[in-house]
Amino acid sequence: MRLTSRYRFSASHRLDTPALTPEENRKLYGKCNNPHGHGHDYVLDITVDGPVDQDGQVVNREAMDALVRKQVLARLDHKNLNADVPELAVSVTTTENLARLVHGALSEHWTLSARLARVRISETARNTFELEVPQG
Amino acid sequence: MFLTRKAEFSASHVCANPAWSADQNQAVYGNNANPNGHGHNYVLEVTLTGDPDPVTGMVFDLRELKEILNREVVDPMDHRFLNKEVPPFDRVVPTTENLAVEIWRRIAPQIRRDGVRLHNVRLYETADLYVDYEGGHFEDQR
Image 1 (tube, rainbow over the protein chains, first blue to last red):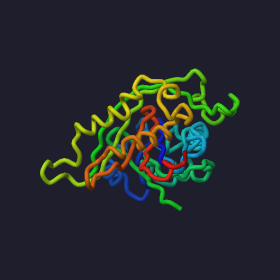
Image 2 (cartoon, chains in turn orange, blue):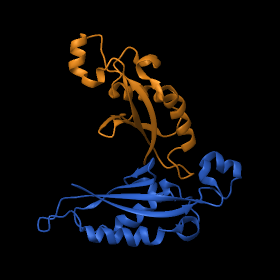
Image 3 (cartoon, each protein chain N blue to C red):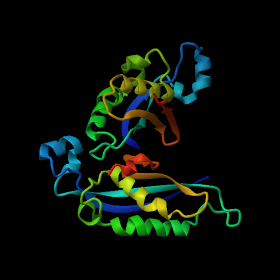
Image 4 (cartoon, helix red, strand yellow):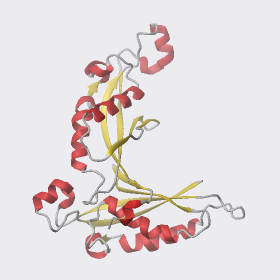
């Protein structure tokens, strides 16, 4: 059975890569390249997959919330993703890279009985990115 | 093709094992263990899979599906205290997971059309938390 829990965080960022010229960055990233940055209210859906245990649960909700709060929300909520998150300093702060970061941070400290099955992040209500975690 | 129909019901429940202490229940079920109960506006999304009938163009008669959901889920569960009024939750802890399994058990045998079957039960406990159940071995655990 799969269980999905929704979390929210707000952060600012700017899309810009040193691999391109300023003009190329402006052309590629458009408004997202604004030098002063801009922000989003991100919506994060974490899905776990596993059997229903004797207590009738896939996962202990409080343990899951605590893990996400500590490993993800504490590091991203009300932060500047370009300036405040060292792991993202070497990559562009796209939501794709953010999903990878969330997956890495969670799996590195994963202590839950169910497996991490999916990370889904909505940057706005119109843009959603899903990272499906392969089994095994 | 997949067909999904939504239904809502509001109910109260307590998630606690009567054999345990209050502290044990709090550790496992958190706020859901409050002995006096609390409620949710559950949202159920039932997904069927199959090919559309060549004559009617439908995977399944939506009116019939609505009647099944009302009869098996909404009528018996809406505005009820699950632990006290809706078996098997007098002896099975009414977690969202167990509720999804029970809803599957009630609905799956009612989907009687060749080549069409229940594919998924998605149950939202709140807008921020849901489970997906595609049937299978948890059905036999109790």
